[in-house]
Structures are given as structure tokens and as C-alpha cells.
Length: 223
Image: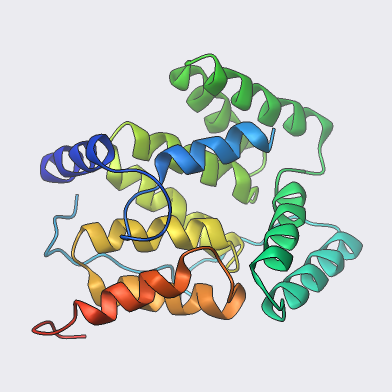
């Protein structure tokens, strides 16, 4: 755990930005929060399970779930990046709506706490949210970004994997998870995550370059 914390802290301090280069995107992830209202490199890091373990089921009304499914269908068929970006924004708005007025208010408070530099306060609120609504993927995703910022890799990975058990199409969580796996030199697993992301959102910003970077660097590696 110590090696992970130190490595992630140095990574976050030294890197930032967007998808090219396959790095951890904490500044970008935190901007999404604001706008939306012990394994080492050679260790065995499991990907989110699709079967064989308890699965969290997102609590979304049937009609809202149908709307979300429709948006994801359109996202997979988007013609270009501009169209995909608009659909991503619509999907993120729906992810930020919990279906509970109280939980929506708590989500708003997390954004205000982050904006005020009170990460600890935001984490307290998000901890409460995961208890109130254990199938609210947005709460786990926001908490993961804060854990990444602080260099707490193990809980961040746990939260990202929980997000993807609740919502396997969560393109932001897939992006973050792939970046962490790549930094941990888990190249094959990072590529698997990116391939899943490609199926969900083919025009995700920087996705093609990220895949190409892993493949180009695979010479001499077992990928």
C-alpha cells in the first residue's frame, strides 16, 4: 500500500491533462464534479466482475432507465466527437440526479466543498451518500476522484470498480481505471478496459491515441 500511495502521489503531482499518455486524470475528474453539481505494479489487480459475485443494481425508475439506454445507444452510434460530447453531457446530468431530493442536495454540497478546498468535508458527505444510496454510482465516482487526488489508490480502485458494477457503461470510471492500470504497468488489463470503453463511446476524447500508445509500447511485453 505504501508503494502505491507514494507512486500515485508522485504521478498526480507530475502529470495531469487528458487521455493521451494514459495518466491519472484527477484535475479533469474534479472539474466534472464541480461542473456536474495494497497492490504494487506487479500485483494482481482484478477488473470489475461481471458475474460470480454480488452485483449492485442501480436504483433508476424504469422510464429513466429507458431514457438512459437510449442515450447510450445514440452514443455508440455517434458520428463524431462533437455529437458524442453532447450525449456524454446529457448522460452525466442523469448520473448526477439520484432520484432523491436529499441526495441531490448532498451531491451539490460535495461540489461546493471541493470548490472551497474542503476535500475532507466532501468525503464525509460522499461516505454518507454511499450509505443512503448504495447503488448511486455518482457518489462512488466522485469519491474515487478525491481518493486519487490524495494518493489513496486502493480505496480509489475499489470505488471505481463499484461504479462499474453499478453502471458498466460508466465511461468516466473506465477512463480513470484504465489510466491507473497503465500507470501500474498493468498494460493488458488497461487495454481491456479501453476496449470496453470503445464499445460504449467510440468517440471518447483521446481514446484512439490511448489504445495506440499501449499497442505501440507492447513490443517486448506480453500483450
